[in-house]
Image 1: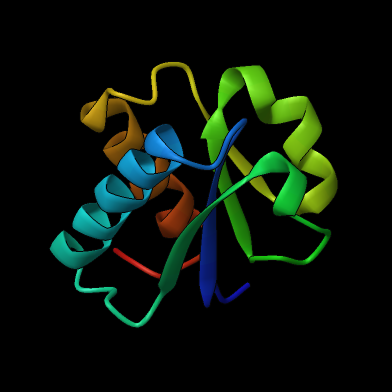
Image 2: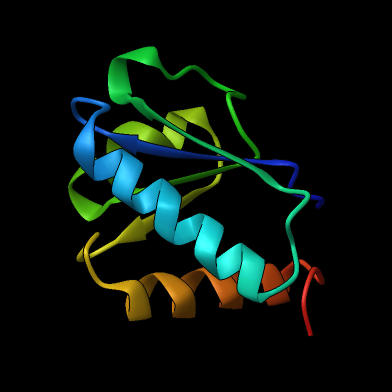
Length: 97
């Protein structure tokens, strides 16, 4: 599966999802995957198919699964957790080695 778009979702769509968006972009840049579009939004603005991958906090995982494949973070502030989980998922999809 190709990933063209990642949506970072939080409850209100302001600070926390924007922080996750910036961190996702940083990981993608480090992996030389700059062609993947990343945006942030609140839970109420999302819809099924909004993105190829949803990144959210573990507290929103059940709500976000209906929108598509979901990567849940136990701590959205933890860049190491994000990097490990996102890189592993991208490796599984054959997008990085």
